Image 1 (cartoon, rainbow, N blue to C red):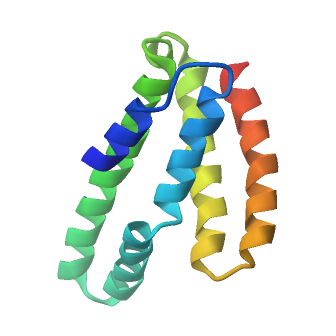
Image 2: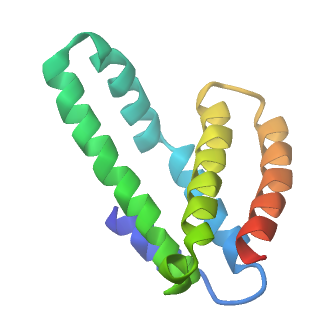
Length: 127
């Protein structure tokens, strides 16, 4: 979570900032840590004790990722009610696209889809 915060904070301000932050999140969701979380979550479905621990940790990670909205939007995230919903949509779409990587889809195809999706998400978020 600290690494994510540092990477998001390091993204320079400018016209493509939202896209670059979405790229950071896409990399996080498509990386080995999130892959491990998915594996544990799937494995824990049959074990209530493990499921409770995984669910708690997954919620903490999701809160940390959602908190990156402050880095992107500052106070606008709470000042404009639709921004929170837009950010949640962007996170869901980013996570979904990144999971394609974890599932072994062809990397070139995933990257092509991601670039198109990222542009649309940035337009939604910056608009």
